[in-house]
Amino acid sequence: MTADASDVDFDVVPETDQSFENALANARAGRRLTVADGIELITTGTDVDGIDQRRKELVLEAADRRRADVVGDEVTFVANVNNNVTTACNTGCLFCNFKDTAHQFETDHHEDHAGFTKTPEESKAVVEDAVDRGVYEVTSVSGLHPAFGLNDEHRETLDPDDPEHNYKPPERYTTDPHTYVDQIRAMSDAGAHVHSITPEEAEHAQRGVDWGYRDVYAALADAGLDTVPGTAAEILVDEVRDVICPGKIDTAEWVTAMEAAADVGLPMTATIMYGHVENAAHRVHHLDVVRDLQDRTDNITEFVPLSFVHQQTPLYDRGVVTGGASDAEDELMVAVSRLYLDNVDHIQSSWVKFGNAKGLKLLHCGADDFMGTILSEEITKRAGGQHGEFRSVADYADMITAIGRTPVERSTDYTERRVLDPSADTLGPRLGPKADGTPLVPERDDAARELASADD
Ligand SMILES: C[S@@+](CC[C@H](N)C(=O)[O-])C[C@H]1O[C@@H](n2cnc3c(N)ncnc32)[C@H](O)[C@@H]1O
Ligand SMILES: Nc1c(NC[C@H](O)[C@H](O)[C@H](O)CO)[nH]c(=O)[nH]c1=O
Ligand SMILES: N[C@@H](Cc1ccc(O)cc1)C(=O)O
Ligand code: SF4
Image 1: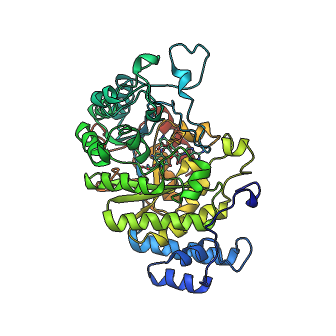
Image 2: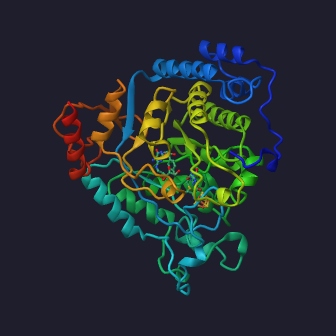
Image 3: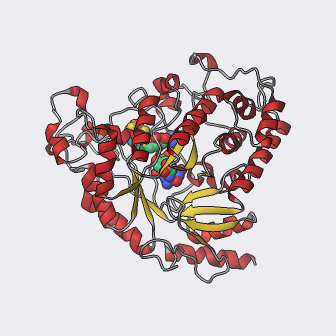
């Protein structure tokens, strides 16, 4: 939410010739929605000021029905671990408090800082430990460390004296992150499915050379990359990117990188990060870019609405925004994602962004996936998020059965699924290479079970 709407003067505005009633009729009938339909639904009508409660319920109901028609009653989650390699980043996105400016990581910088860089060996150890506990996947997203390159050849090619390349040799840093290929291989060798390399990271992995995204993703797939997180999407309308992330690739480049990942055969997710300076029309234009990309690739497994966490971000500190999305906006974002994206099967409710209560509510607004166990979290926490860093399989079983749905552990690409038996004595993951149903974090899971049975 902006401090003052007139602060940011956008060309794209939520005005349409469509009526709310016609848009709702199109949604209910399963007709492909237009941008105007989407704007009418997400605003609960451009003819009313603010959100109309009665109309909102009608949109949520239509989305919940669509969810039931497309995927039924199952609610999925993945047993995964987050392993972010480095927080060093000079891109300067104004919504992000994950990054630390890279000069702080240099050997001649002597003041303390809260950031970190892991070597491939350290990444491997984190993932090995998680795989031993039963995890299936590692999600790895990182700052654009200046010493990163795709591989050794890339690092040798990059010119440290050309400021355009944002490259400094590894000797300049206390810890060498090595290359993207080294990091991916290390995590893959640890036995996990590797979900990594956002379009922005792929751009960093080919800066200063003309290898193209296809070659970058092919080389990374060879090193063990399995699927691609479609983050760095933020809002896929350039006039918004110019305000919140002027250092990032533009919309067309993001789409090009995703198409290349699809070409190489890597399944991918897509995201939106909303609730800052953008308006409702931008959100729908973003959905339109994603639907169009999916028409061409058919490779997007899930769509993840990420609500902006504002508390400790430059956008909030500088008074550009006064807060994030309201509950009603979150509900409508999820519902209209379900209705608009008629070619994407799964919509995620992200507990790290919404918490348990709202996260569960969103499973009645069109969402059918409840994210993953993640075990650790830095991006949302550093921005001021307060919903923790871990959910156990027992937590999932309890929460999902409490709302009358069926808990299902899934693989990252949704091809493998296992329905949970919530009454089992112990509840742990079963899809990972070393998963045998033992709880992920024994003490915590046992405590959760005891609490649950005390309620019986
Ligand atoms: C922190 S970046 C890491 C990967 C890489 N540097 C990139 O930008 O693609 C991953 C994603 O986290 C999300 N993110 C960062 N800060 C956030 C915040 N304050 N609230 C919600 N999501 C945020 C953004 O969508 C961003 O694309
Ligand atoms: N794997 C998912 C995550 N992981 C956490 C992220 O890596 C990150 O810390 C945060 O979400 C940044 O915005 N988060 C999700 O919301 N959904 C996932 O599937
Ligand atoms: N798992 C989702 C969500 C995600 C969100 C934010 C991240 O930083 C990473 C991942 C994806 O693959 O895109
Ligand atoms: S969102 Fe990614 S690219 Fe932007 S500052 Fe944060 S870590 Fe860097």
